[in-house]
View (tube, rainbow, N blue to C red):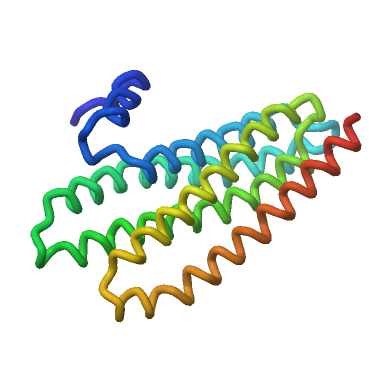
Length: 192
């Protein structure tokens, strides 16, 4: 079993000409950082919210782990896509597309945890929450772009069958993002 790369090694690999890690890998890592910041904010609960904050933390840890697994699986999907012959290409593209969709699912779940961070964390943690929101919005936009780009590479019949589900997912994550921005603005006003 090999140890995970250091942050410097990961950044150097991302900057290299190798197919992996790529954009979706970086986006998933950013989403994992967002969840970690929400989790951190809950470790400083507002008075009277200690048990609710602890319960929210217990739910966030598996999501952060899931996002880190997406980092690893996206690297494998990119390597498979880069080495695929023409017969394997559609399957490899579908794998990359599904990775983007799984990331969007995780972002949707992270937005629900954001609300708990806003509700139960101490007002002094608002900067951590805001940084997490910015990372999550970037992950959302990047995952949507990755899904739309890989959808264009699929055979037309596969793309047509996948498009309605992607549209629903984009609508859902966009609504949650808007709600999150509103909640953050409200919390900023309340803290100020």
